[in-house]
Image 1 (tube, one colour):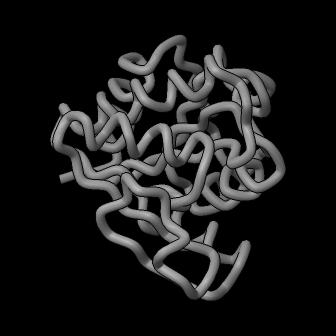
Image 2: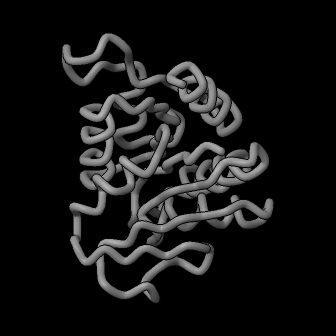
Length: 167
């Protein structure tokens, strides 16, 4: 069973990004994978909602000490009490990551995933850093790129293939 991280904007009002996140969550669940995220609002909540609608399993790695801070679609709540450092836990708990929209917190997760050599797919149509960095290499430490996806199914297809290629 794969664990797929979904990273994206917490405070987004971008309806397209939120709908894409729901679709990604649904696709993850229909493939029998576990969705891992930061467990809060925005893209994280929308992805968890999509997964739960399909009977999927969701894990929220929370920055604070209180499990009640998790969005209502998180099954497994992991309060860390370590703030932004929880981004490393999200990355290390994921076999590969899908980036949707994204702001500075998402960018930190992306950089950690890059450094950890985790496969990354960016949903460029969602905007934000996902649009800016889809198809890019962050530096010369890796020969691959952040793969670009046009829709949710494409994103999940690509991340699963990348994960399988690593095993």
